[in-house]
Length: 313
Image (cartoon, rainbow, N blue to C red; front, side, top):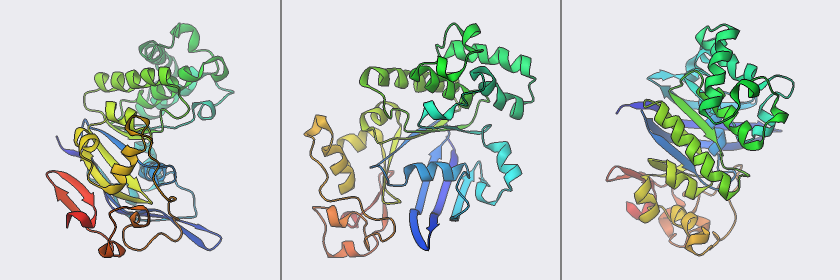
């Protein structure tokens, strides 16, 4: 199994009225072929920014440094025309808000067909025939009727499945899904899990990056977990090991905050991305912190897992 996506030394900074927001700060991360990687962490940690950086959908007031290698090709060095051929075809994005992500004045079928027309050269008639099959596959029935309906005629769950149908219509190599369980109750989460499992079963070569703060959801779907804190990756670990023997103190604190583990809140507040703490970003909130934590911690390999913490040096 080879590496599909490799991020090297990625920095993403927003310049706002002379203030620099360090949204992604020196991230190194790999996603393997046919792997589901869950990117977890508190809200505001930089997870979604990392996802849209891969797709090069950042605003104009952004500074980006580093490399994002997709099948060995550095996405940051491509022209916008070259990137447009990859975005939506080889890399698909499933946004976190289905209610606002579909165009209300276009039929859903036409919106799902558009990537196939653009990237696969299909004509409208054949693309819509394929859309009917996709709607049926994702249990949006009766598909022959639903293909001609508008988004307001779909339930929330149906809109979410329609976005996934749109994302998978071109048989991408990588799907990036941003907070797919946000605002979803427990019963509907089961459907979301089934949805992503169904996608994977249909395409054995597909990789998935699931951006989420929902740890139980990540546990069910992911092969590996990457933990993000204040713009940095602090741990990358196999899923079973992460939930049974987390390495980083922040990972342990995240797990302890789950209701099933006692609902113990993480003390303190998330740090500023404008003026982050020196050294380890987590040390002001960490019960294990000591003098060396005021220095930037190394990234340490342990049995195929990675942790950014002085405790393991």
